[in-house]
Every structure is written in structure tokens, then in C-alpha cells.
Image 1 (cartoon, rainbow, N blue to C red):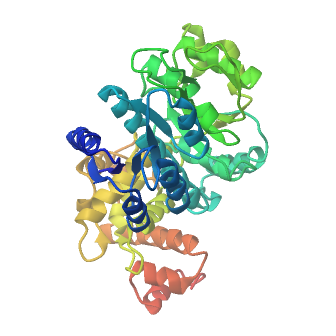
Image 2 (cartoon, rainbow, N blue to C red; image 1 turned 180 degrees about the vertical axis):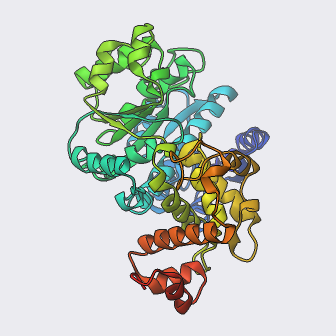
Image 3 (cartoon, rainbow, N blue to C red; image 1 turned 180 degrees about the horizontal axis):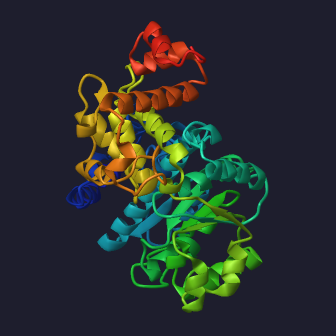
Length: 461
């Protein structure tokens, strides 16, 4: 729940503002004394400061400057009497997010409050993202054991230092945004913002406003000017996900941005220069959409200067076990032993088709970890859909040798021999992940070092 500090020396105004904001579900702290307000800002965290400009002895401008110094992440909205716009503009220059004139309209006030809180959230998320970028989205965290993913990583290394527009292809859940963030963090723009837009998630008018911004009065509800994402990400990277879902009318405006490096806010006649690298992604073939008249051909050629194709997980079997182990490590609290994967559960997950790709695999592991006992993931801990589907799938070791699903494929092999084979494969995967460190591998497997040596082939012990 957002916390709002409301400061006004008029008791009636203070009471009205507190009532309105509490009715919207906000936590409100009212204060009619400027000095006490400064003390509150110093002692407590607030998402938003709503402050009257004209107060004595400590005025609103003093409180604004104090807040910008002591709590720079707090958004500030100034309240000013009608006709004092010059003072309000001065407040904006000092760091206020916006101002509202008295007497205010409730709808206008609430819209401004919502925008200020959303802006603070965006700033906070971007700060968190910068902290994460050097860990979560490092290249070494992109699992690439398969040849196709190794090729993707090599592409990232080559194109990241450039300013070229990239079009990333891949089914839903393959990690297109992860690749986009990796490109950003390897680029000269890594210290600037990375913003993602899901073109399929927003209706046309809202998508246009989000991307390019709007001016006050451009449409119903546009109570003030709004900066678009292309302006907000200046110097950084904007990622346009599901680009194939973008309406044709907006495609034309995006083409102009790519060609002219400038945007025009909705309702405005002025062009604003922008500096943003564009990365786009799609899970559909844009060539087909062009033939259907749903996507502009000229925009397609602007976007696909360098295409990167991410193969579905079913075509990257070498990545499955490393991905499983990666998710297990990410979901295991620091200081706790890593759960191990039963060889039979490992086999089930290797032969499953993974229609939801990496995202489905992550969810399956989280499901298994919730049900696993004794620190070991068994087939019964996996989602029923995964286990049932795997029952009819051929074993990877015999696929192509016999009719899929036939008993001939495993005829003459005992269950003990089969599990031993899968156990050896799993040991090799864990050793690969620990870079051959047998002590670390034994710890991850929850077995003694002597047991690990006994289970390894003589040539590798």
C-alpha cells in the first residue's frame, strides 16, 4: 500500500485530502507543520509527498528541497493557489513531479497522484534492474550447452557493442526478453535504462500513448502532459515484445522513430529528438503477416537488420538438465543443500516435449521443489502433465533405433541397468556444471566423495 505524506497548514484542506486519498486505499500521514513534516521525511519512508507551497514558517519550497535531498526516491506533488503557476514551475525545476492548483478537481488530483506513484515505481524498478543486470542477466547465466544456444550467445557478443536494431525470433517462453537484456548489459548503454513493452498486452490508444507520450487534453483523461517510453529511455534500450501484434497505425509512427530518431506526442505538432536502441521480438513469422497485410514490409526491414533465432527447448535437449540444475540452484535458499534429481525424474524431464519451453520447465521445477521430500526430486513430485506425457515418449537413448513407444526399444534391458545408465548421465551433467570439481559435485548430489568415485567410470574416477 503506497504511503503518502500530506502537508498543508489549512486544517480543512488537510482533512479533505486525507479523506479522498484514504478512500482510494492509500496510507495517509497528515501534517500541518512544515518542521514536523521535515522530521517525518527524515525518519520515515514515503512513496509520495503532497505539499502546499505557501506555508509559514517553513514553506513548501523548503520542504520540497529537503525531500529531494533526504528522500530522492519520493515523488512530490505541489499544491498551489490558482494564478501562482510561475511558482509551481519553479517547483518543477527543483524536482517536483507535478503540481495541482487550488481549488482542485478530485479526478484531476487522483490521476496526478496515480501518475506520480507509477513514476516512482518505474524509477525504483529501474534501480533494482541495474542491480540485477550484472548478476541475473550476465552471459554466464544464459544456459548454452546446445549448439544453437551457443550460437545465440556468440551473436549477442558480436552485436551488443553496436547500436544496430535486433529482431529476436522464438516461441513463447524461450527467453527472448532474457536475450534482449543480455544484449543491453553487454552494450555501451548498460548504465542507462532498459524498458520492455508488450505490444500485445495494451489496446491501441494506450499503446500509442505509452510509447510516444501525449499532451494535456489530447484525449479524455489526459489531464497533463506525459512523457512516452522512447523519451524516458533516452540513452538506453527499449524492447518491443510481440511486435507482430502492433496495430498498423502505430507501426507507421514507429517507422518514423527508427528513421528520423524523433517522436511526436499524441495531440502535439512538435517533434522531440530521442536516442534509444530498439530491440524487438516476435513468436510469429512477420513475413506471413506482411502477406496478410497485417505488418508493414518497410518496418520489417528496419527491425530485422540482425535477426536472432532462439530454438524451442524440444530442439535443445543438451540444455534441459543444465537448465533444471540452474533453476534448482536459483530456488534454493543460500546456505541450504541443493536438492538432487532422481535419475528417473531426470529421464522424464529429458523426454518431455516442453511446449511451454523454458518458462514451463521453470514452473515444473518449482512445483517439484514444493512437493519433494528428503531433498530428492522424484517423478511423483513433477506436474502430472509432464509425467503422463513422458510415459508415451521414446527414450532419448533409443529414439530412431526402433518404432517410437515400442517395447522392442528397451527389450532385454533391466530396470536396474536402465537406471544405472541414467544415473551415469546425470553424474556427467553435474560434473559438467561444477567444471569437474568432484567435491562440489558430491556435495550437490548429497553423496560422499568416495561414493561419487565408486559410481564414476574407471576412466574418470
